[in-house]
Amino acid sequence: MFGKLSISLFVLIIFYHDLSDAQKKKETLLSEKVTQMMEWASKRSVIRMNGDKFRRFVKAPPRNYSVLIMFTALQPQRQCGVCRQADEEFQVLANSWRYSSAFTNKVFFASVDFDEGSDVFQMLNMNSAPTFLHFPSKGKPRKSDTYELQVRGFAAEQLARWVADRTDVQIRIIRPPNYAGPLLLGFLLAAIGGLAYLRRHNLEFLFNKSVWAFSALCFVLIMTSGQMWNHIRGPPYAHKNPSTGQVSYIHGSSQAQFVAETHIVLLFNAAVTMGMVLLCEAATSDMDIGKRKIMCVAGIGLVMLFFSWLLSIFRAKYHGYPYSFLMS
Image 1 (cartoon, rainbow, N blue to C red):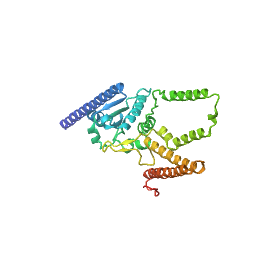
Image 2 (image 1 turned 90 degrees about the vertical axis):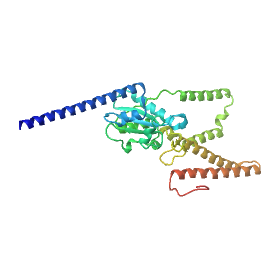
Image 3 (image 1 turned 60 degrees about the horizontal axis):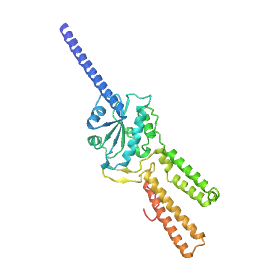
Image 4 (image 1 turned 180 degrees about the vertical axis):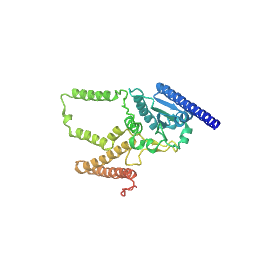
């Protein structure tokens, strides 16, 4: 009986010792991984990863830190302009976190370029870029750990809200100073002031109805085309599928838009407006009847053609919309 107890005790001691050794190895490995990640983060706010680094520091346990990764295609031959714009915003986000007083080793930012980690893209069945994924410290990524780029855009502020939602880490975005806006405003004010000074003896142009009407019309066209939405959300200019190379300028959802789409809508609205102006001029001007007919035909053509295109864009975004004009 005493011999059996001794053997059992011996086995338990060995098992506990092996378990303790395994735990120590796990803690040592985790410490090494965190130390290495911190070293990389001290050099670059966004850690560049290939397939080996991704498997070792993101996929393989143990890991007690979250990693937010941008999957991108920045090489010139990929011709992904959106990727470059998204990369700039991601850098702003990572720098704001890296140089904040709240910086810890619990959240890291990284990127995987298609030409440096194509095996990672295949592993995750990913066929588009840019894509943002959150790999939590515990468990596997969920659906909500994939950033809705097409809906929310890639502005650093929007990404920071997503990070706060997934990790409870609040990041205050700090952008480098941009003097282009103040300089442009100063130049514009100087030009207006110089023009007013040169014409100080004849300021009738300030009371010209056509000048004010044109200025108001430009402002209305800019606002109704969605420029303010672009300023708030920061959407990509367009979207290029890296697999097929197809570029989309019109977003397929009514919940989002591309910058190029707003430019197209602005031009179409301007063409419709021009058509309406030509029709009004043809009806009220004192010009030759032949010229008035030409203006009338041109106005009708502009209104019909570009309104039809506007309606087709509306149909493409609001699926199931039943009405069309000239073209479907």
